Length: 389
Image (tube, rainbow, N blue to C red):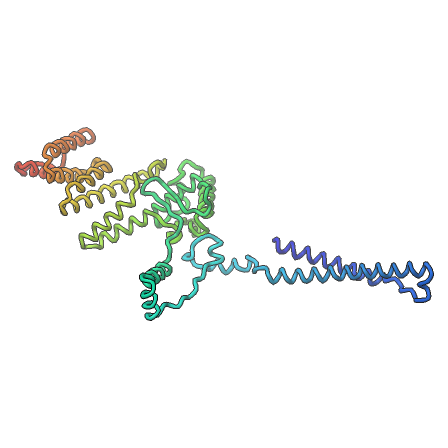
């Protein structure tokens, strides 16, 4: 718009100058002859002619200056953005980022790899240089992870947004939490009914639209995908601890080696930094919070079991207590805890923990410990394991 206004202004100025020059040419005063220069009338005519000629030269100079300035600015000015927009609409979402990153993507230059002789020469003169160069090239070739990160395995946190210092709307944070926990996304009406069931349909649609627009402003134009009435989070534009957890669980189920299983268990547990969505008043997420809390307790119990089998009874006891605190109704962490305490020779602690479990189950559910827990308790105390149900 500014470019059009500037061009129109230059055109009007040029038109005015051309009109002035034409009027000056048409109104050219007569040049007095040499015989009339001696009287006063001839001198006045000469001065008038000189003034006319000066005005004509000034007008022509201004016109040439305007034309030259227009050419110079037109050559230096970049192509208008409107010419680039149709092209960048076809850029795939893998490029990521906001409009500035999609409109002007960084194109890495091709670098000639070092030859074997050059690498050896560098290594001989500067030890470690060749290795650093190779590792640096590998890092440069790998795609960096998205800068925006959403964490739900703890307090809801959204970092790395494009507009630092500006808080997201409450509805936007709620929408992003929903889309993180639902990788397949959801239909417009389903999202409104889940997040804002008390809102009238028109207000709910307006609130969802504003939340999606706010999310795109902070996370990137393509962070929230809308296809007709279906909303979904573009996982290639955002890093989430929920996706990292799912990936760790997938690798854990595929691994058969105890060492690799232990590594994936530790990575999965490290993603939890507290209660899932702690501090967020999200009634719709309560079932997902309970599921994630139970999953964390199960992972803690499995990691503790592996530590106990490797001879680390103290580490197993610490994980068992953490798992029991995460899911008090689960008896498996208690079984692990009494096994670890028995391995440490704490007979009284075994009895105390079992009795505490029995009282809690009776107070909350009116139940007794299950058969497996009873058998384990009697066995650890050296008694007969044949217990009737």
